[in-house]
Length: 207
Image 1 (cartoon, helix red, strand yellow):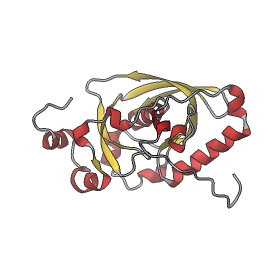
Image 2 (cartoon, rainbow, N blue to C red):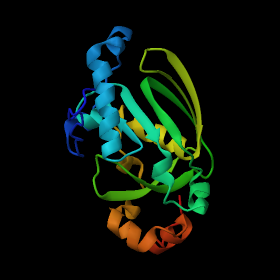
Image 3 (cartoon, helix red, strand yellow):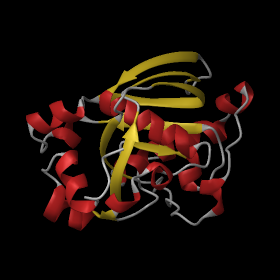
């Protein structure tokens, strides 16, 4: 990254075909290439500027099995401790996952929380996710890494790896919970999922 150079990229939105394609894997030689190393730098800066806690290569128009993740301390400064505890959310240092393989350790019931996406600007909805996952991947140097993640970090990994397979969070979302971020902040932000579900879909039990 050069000082003063604009390295942020355009984040593509739902409807772009690249978000629905299965991304291709990267070879070890590609990972080491200047093009991919520069792309990782640009993705990191794009994610931070958005801001977001993860960004997959298809979201910037590149159909590659590559994602960057970071949940910074300052993103959590204005979140109540009780909310952080409920989400089981802690800071996650910047890292890269390439060609990931994920094992979801399902729980019953799943973890249900509102989730948004940089490629679905302005909307959120309740997405059920596994509370624990194991991920095997390569890092930015092409070295094997293994990750055991819990809580919100596990949710981030599932969200970004979904992107690499052409899946968006709206595909997993409870449809009746889809809403704008403004509506979420005004009406639902501090309510438990059970109360939200009862208000939005009183005829059916929470899945």
